[in-house]
Length: 132
Figure 1 (cartoon, rainbow, N blue to C red):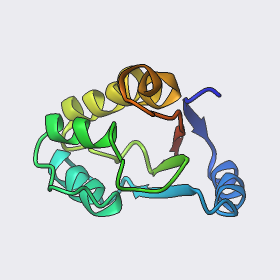
Figure 2: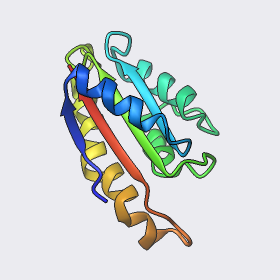
Figure 3: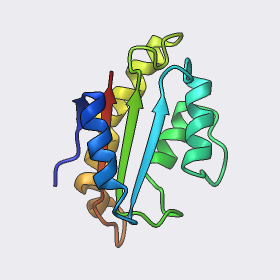
């Protein structure tokens, strides 16, 4: 299992979503980059989409929740970021932090680190698809 950030075309994204949505254990999130212009927009979206138990108002609390997800019953996560160039375009510093956090922390965590640090922790497929 390899968790990745992948660049895909709109056509590829649509085909992937059709396949992924057949799996009831897969949560597919669609982020519209035209609507998510800054960190606060992103946190509001993720709070609602992933039903965080306590609202995340900072990158630190968001990071805690995105590497927990114990309240959700999924074995696979697929996040599609559409209109990536517009995504967080008013907050490029935090955009870079979020994307880097996926690459350096979230994806490796769900790929295997969770088994090392959480009793009974299980690896999960967790992929981010950048669609332009």
